[in-house]
Amino acid sequence: MPVSSAVRDRCRTLLGAREEIRYVFPAVSLGPPGGAGFLVVVTGAGVSVLGTRVLRSDRPVSVHASFPRRTRLGPIRWRPGPRIELGSMTLEFDEEYAAVVAAADAEVFAPETLPPDPLPHL
Image 1 (cartoon, rainbow, N blue to C red):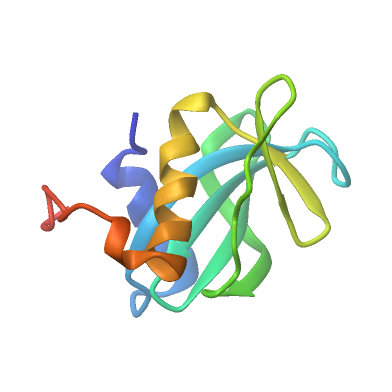
Image 2: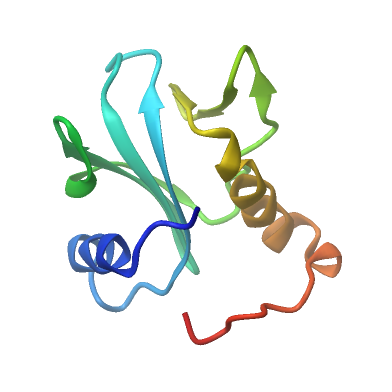
């Protein structure tokens, strides 16, 4: 299930209105800082890991890390759930967001494999 427009708006407010958000998905850190909630936000310019409030994964409060857009999110490792390594962090996320991770990587590294956006106005 995609994150709501309200969550996207909160991310946009934290990142600045100039950033076009392409993909967003919630994740939990398995390494330092262990058990912390994050939103991974992919924009046209970069990849940001936003820290969220405790017990409120829909409320970003800080930019924890930033990476250039050419940063590969995958490969996804499955043990037991989907995980990625981003910088020094290991992030776990719900299986439903695996397609988001794959699409974010494909957009940069294999754009010819992406289908046309069915909802370009969102």
